Structure formats: structure tokens, C-alpha cells
Length: 77
Image (cartoon, rainbow, N blue to C red; front, side, top):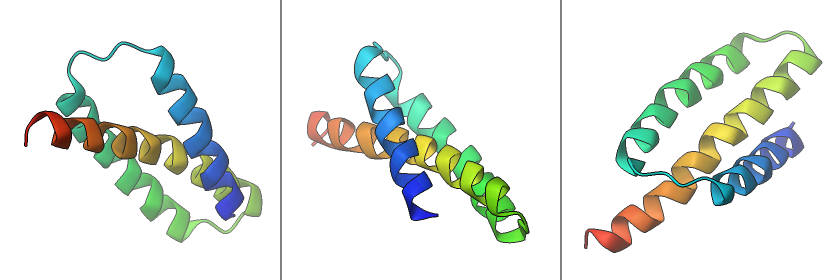
């Protein structure tokens, strides 16, 4: 299952490198809500394939937060 998270984080990071994001704080805040909802859905999931898909999408949301926190901290401190 953690492989799905890693692949999602990798894909999310590669997509973010090709985008120009002007409002990084808003994108960061918006990534926390789906990430939390996906985490709750993963807890209720009984299917292995659904769990794998949820971990992949959770990795996508995590990539946004991981890649947006560091630049925001560096620019504002």
C-alpha cells in the first residue's frame, strides 16, 4: 500500500515542477482537505484496489503539501 503513496507523491511532484503556481498558500491549504478526506476513506475501505487508489491520491495531495511548504517557509522567514 505504501508503494501507491510513493508513486502518487512522485507523480504529484513531477506535475508540480511543470506548473507555474502563483497562489501557493491557497494550493497548500486546498491540499489538506482532500488529503484528510482520503485518509478517512482509506480507514473505511474494505477493498485492496480501492485502498491502493486512495493511497495514490493521498500521495498526490501529500506531494502538493510537501513541495509547497518548503518554498513558503524559505520565502517568509
